[in-house]
Image 1: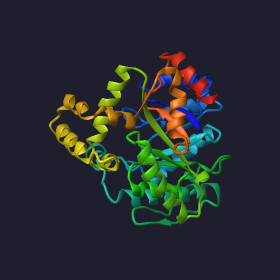
Image 2: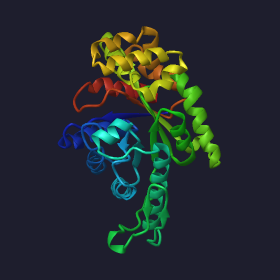
Image 3: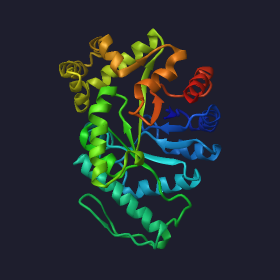
Amino acid sequence: MKIDVATLVPNLREMPELARGVEQMGFDGLWTSETQHDPFLPLALAAEHTTRVELGTAIAVAFPRSPTVLAHIAWDLAAASNGRFILGLGTQVKPHIERRFGMTWEHPTAKLREMILAMRAVWAAWQGDGRVNFRGEFYKITLMTPFFNPGPIEYPNIPIYIAGVNEKLCQLAGELCQGFHAHPFHTAKYLREVTLPNIEIGMQKTQRARADIQISSAVFVATDDAEKEMARAQISFYASTPSYRPVLETHGWGEVGEKLSTLAARKEWGAMSEQITDDMLEQFCVITSPDQLAHALKTRYAGLLDRITLYTPFEPGQDVEKWKALVTAFKQ
């Protein structure tokens, strides 16, 4: 099991120091996300200032970009990092695609599947004879002249992880991808009973083995009362999202999700965390003491996750000893 770290990178000038610090502490991977900033730019800097740590997106939103645009970004980052780059993609949800990105929302699983195949067709052209002839329902890519072909690289087999909650995306990951970003809004029960069985269904389509895919996730942890309440608030926000309702329903908590959706629509944010009981919190969050955190993480996620990231983002110069202690204990 690998231990990774996530960062929001509020300022690109901080990235070299942050990346060096992450690598020196012994983390296995460094993930960026598409929230307030572009997820790819920080990784170009991280690639320049590290030599060992894996670098990836968790996640970049797929549909605002074309397969060829993503193929170029990933190709350059794979070359710059000497094969350490992981392309992590997510579909986002309909309101964000339509109202935040101004794009069309249509058949997300089928479209993401086709995007992956189209990117790989482009990469194969660059690594091979330069010819591409991809014709799908959503994407048609048939032109690649030498002027726009970056040519072969040393590490062309770029891992693709996709993110998701529900069954279809789990199956797609098992069929085509090297990794799956399980949503932080999960429980061990949901991973065991829904996520992994559906990944297995996908793997059977292409005769792949469990060892062919890594399951990664950011996880909620709390080592004091303040962290418990922060986790409770964030969990209540995720639980209000209708598309994440199956996680709650696995535990028989569907009505809580409906109530939270109503509160969110009314913007009654303060009342939302009150709906997350202590029992619910314990299912979604690893609650333990700081010195037992590494053991608690391994115990809960043994056989379920291959890569663990704390939901709390890493920031340069903050809680340095705490992070060091966690990595040391995790690797013992």
